[in-house]
Image 1 (cartoon, helix red, strand yellow):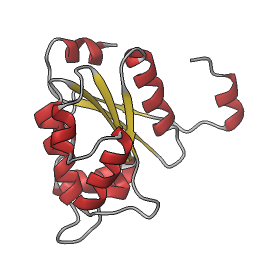
Image 2 (tube, one colour):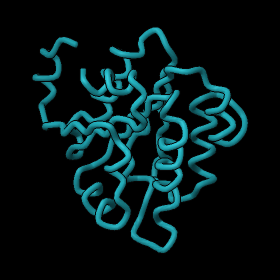
Image 3 (cartoon, helix red, strand yellow):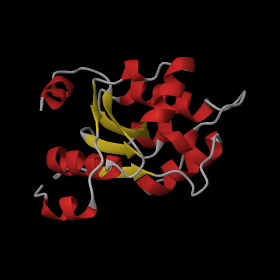
Length: 161
C-alpha cells in the first residue's frame, strides 16, 4: 500500500476513510490497522453516543481509549512510535455552530504534530466531510483518502481479510 510506504518515508498525515453510513468505514479502519500494525499498539477513539463538540469529552474519550491519564498531547508524547490511532465517526465530533469545529481543530493539530510517530486513521461520513471541508479544509492533512462502497451482510461474510 503506497500510503504506508509514504508514511514510512516520513510523510506526515494519516489515512482518511470516507463513506456513507453503514458502508464499512470502521471495519475498513480496523482492517488497515490490523494488517499494518498487528505487532504494534492500535487504539480506537470513539465519540460519545450522542456525539460532542466538547474538547473535554474528546480528551476523556482519548484518555479512556489509550488507558492513560492526562491530555492527548501528554499521552501521545509517551506513546511508542508506530502506534495506530483510529478516530471513528468524525461527523459526531462537530456541529454547525460557533464552537462546532473545536474537536476537529484538535484532531488536525494532533495529526500535524504527531503523525511523524503515530499513524492516524480517521473515518467520516462523506456528506459531513463535504460540509466540514467547505468551512475547515481537513482533507489536506491526510496522505491518502479511501472511499468505501456500501455492501450487504452476506457479502461481508464471504469476504476474506
